[in-house]
Image 1 (cartoon, rainbow, N blue to C red):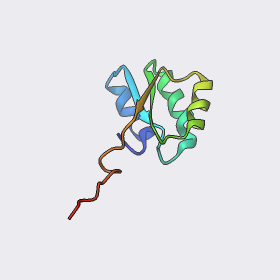
Image 2 (cartoon, one colour):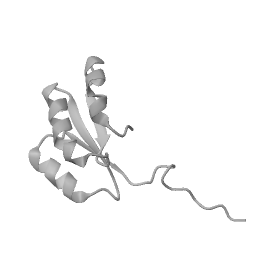
Image 3 (cartoon, rainbow, N blue to C red):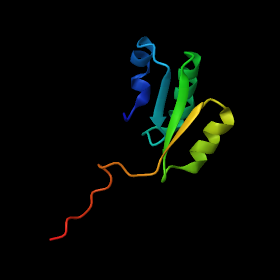
Image 4 (cartoon, rainbow, N blue to C red):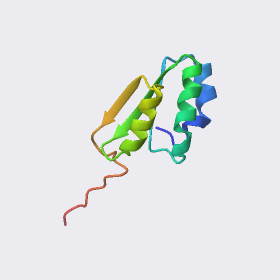
Length: 88
C-alpha cells in the first residue's frame, strides 16, 4: 500500500505485471480516474481497494466510468489505524 500510486506507475509498467490495485483513500482523490485510465491504457487489469469507511460516492463515480475490473473490499482496519488501549 502506497500513498501516491501515480508515482509508482512507470516502474510497475516496466515490471510487466497483470494487475494493479490501489486504495481510494489516497491524498489526491481527484486523480483516481486519471490513474485508472493510465493503467488501463497499458492493458493492465485495474482494481480499487475499499475499506468499510470508504467514500461510496468515489466508488459510484469510478464504477460509472467502467475503468475498474476488480473491487477489493477490506472489512477491517489496518493495525496502524486501530490501536487498542491496553488495560492496566
